[in-house]
Length: 556
Image (tube, rainbow, N blue to C red; front, side):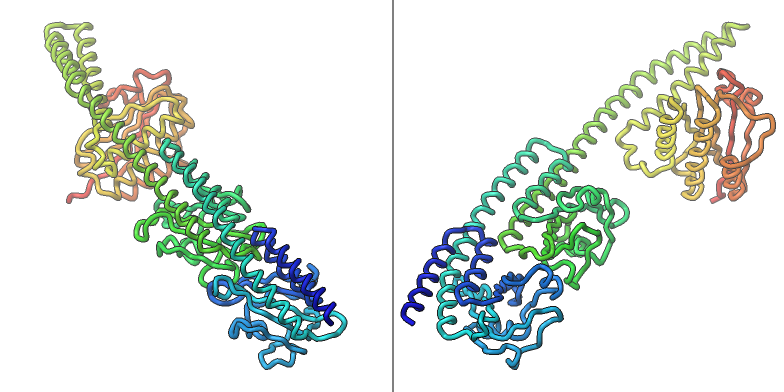
């Protein structure tokens, strides 16, 4: 017996020495449970690591094959005999655990287990977990000597675990500081928000030793979140994905402005996952970007199911990374505002110069030509009159340009004038040139919102027809407001077919006019060129087309 006790003591001392050799928490925990099983000659061993809620958050096993683990199913969380050590953290030794009052049986596929011994693990005086050993080899029972040996191992393991945790935390804080410095440098260097968000996600995944990191920001006008940056599991398919507006971890964090931390995202009934991943996710942290009432998005970091829950220091680091991501978005918006302000100031200067210089010179030139035209007759007089009309048209175009350039027009950006200008600019891409645009009358104040929507739709369809069918080199657009609203679009293209039918786009325009008791006229531009001040059809390379959509204004 003395020799056996001495041999066991030698094994225990060797085990304690081996525990002190490694500083990686994960590998240390596996060594603890393996060493415990070897010391007491147990067939099966397990180490249950407790979570913040006092239940088993991780369960490391020895002696079970992968097939057995798969058949058993989810690991225990702290019920039955295993929970006795959680409720009463003192050593427990049983000849047959199935006869204990707290026993709740074993799952299907579980190997038979009878003899049992368990001892608690405490780190810094607080419960850390429990060692569970079952089925002593040879059909024997665990004795008091086995229990004392495990208590000695548990005491040494507690010190080793604390040292390993401190070492891991020190390394984590070192990586955290490095990542923080790198992100700060990028932000101060003026990197784009997209570049900074990608860096934040990568650093967060590295520091947290995670398998996935993603950043989602609100999609304008919908209230939903869209994944703007992702790395790790399924990153390529995640980017640009829109997330549901409710019911998910990301949505709840975004709405509440409060972080959500879970050890098992699949089993957590507070919220659900909105995307499919190559592997099931377990531990998950979702952090808001920004303050509670000014959330700019969320940072989500996750590990595969079965991974260790995120430690408090990791959650703290992720909170700091989320704050940096929010700062990057804020600075990006401010930088965009500053650039926009610079553009507005430049436009204001150009508009002022056009109004004060160019228009005045043209106006004086037009008066001189008009005065001279009264004294000249015949063909020369007609040509002078035409030149005066050209000057008037040029002044009108410059005035329209001035209005588009004026920063003060920003307050009217939702007005019909701005919407028409936007449609004309958009049509320039498909036409290959910018149509000439002129306004006549009080466009923004006289046209009701419902008619304004029709006007924009009519203009869009008309310019689209010109781009697709006319082959024009010039298009003139006139929006006239008096007792009615008239949209006139004149092109110098190939002209109308021999037999015109209102089909497709033209039928839509006619229907819109009919809804408002108005009319649609489509005629050759040259045949109608004598009417009005616009003579685009007379200058074209083809017969051209004049489209006039006209509806009355309400009397009010």
